[in-house]
Length: 214
Image (cartoon, rainbow, N blue to C red; front, top):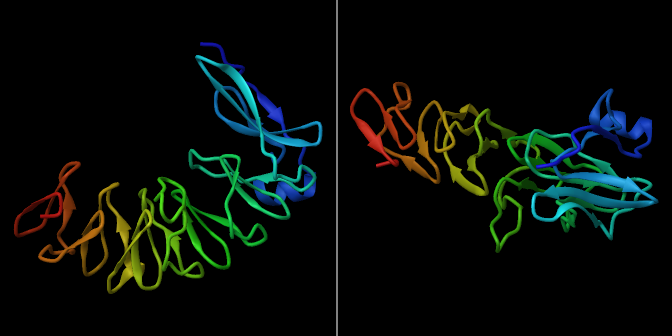
């Protein structure tokens, strides 16, 4: 395995990049991880794999003069220019580059919509339909979030009371002050106050154990 594990400099303007990425705005970690590269007035996705080696794929619709990658802790390439938002080199249609922000846990939002980029629904793309972009917050555990009316599991909404009290317990379990949630369902009989996660599929409250939400 051969990777060039070094820091490469992206051709971002200091002012615009620092507002997006912080003091080390122009520094993008290269090496084996895919990343955006600006070269010769074009934007590329630079990647490496063991069979093909290093590759540079042109991001044809990107405007190199205004392109900026998003700093995020998600394993996904997101960037924007003055016209578009890009994910993994492709255009995220209808997304607003001026208002797009990273919420955490693979959740992004602009003035119109919330997007989840952890896994994709083939029919709806990345948009979380029905989520309120003004009130959506990422929980501490992937893939949970919430808005003022819903618990959010990836791209799925669960309308629950006290949704803003949601705490992600694992990548399958969460709870609010009133409800216990297992992925895309509310565990109606569970006692939220005493509920805890036992293992990957199992939770327990003061009454009994629950396996996969049942």
